[in-house]
Length: 116
Ligand SMILES: [Zn+2]
Ligand SMILES: [Zn+2]
Image (cartoon, rainbow, N blue to C red; front, side, top):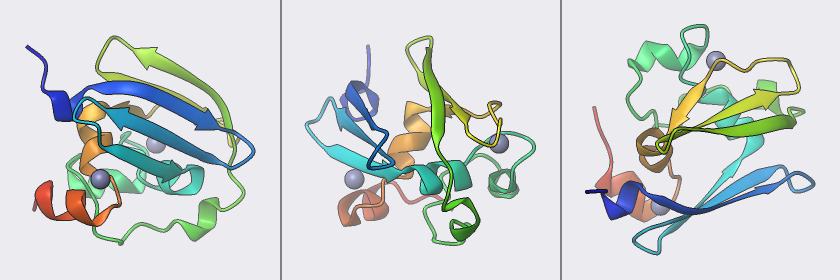
């Protein structure tokens, strides 16, 4: 059984707007700018790992250094994650839907999914 809140029904990549939108199974929609996504990359080589792979939703990430980032490619990893290739050649981050939902920037999710 899948958890509705963590099931991506629709993923839209807006390359010109430099953002990605996800519509979730509970009808919630999330929007992530590319620089934000790049900054929360959960791979072992990126800063986000200092958070132990849990949602980092705390505004501590250095987004500004990725302001010129572009998304070169995106692929689905099984049914549970997305993997991006960025214009800086970085492609080792596997963004699970749980992680993405946990990092939704809207006020509702910030409260609901906050993990310490
Ligand atoms: Zn990374
Ligand atoms: Zn949200």
